[in-house]
Length: 134
Image 1 (cartoon, rainbow, N blue to C red):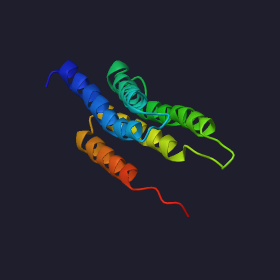
Image 2: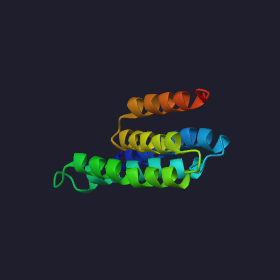
Image 3: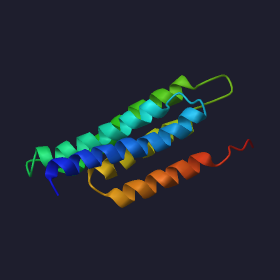
């Protein structure tokens, strides 16, 4: 397969899978919705693709993955702080969906198509579980 086409397909897969997860968050009227999840997945995939193909042997692609994991934590923390109210902490599920979406993007960017798809489907399924109050 043409390397450029392969890279484009990896990025498009990341966008599509981020959209699936983001659609659910958008439908639930959460702070981080469709566009946010698409951009997180795309960004993670792009960082992964650049680390694999752009530095060809000069750098360890795993370092980029670690950076994405740490960096996306700041976005998730912002969602949690934004959701704080007098009733306690809110936004944990959305923060977790952001984190999972970044992982989906990393998998798509690494060319792990099936793993990315399965992880996105599982994430979407978990987000569809009705919330229970204890």
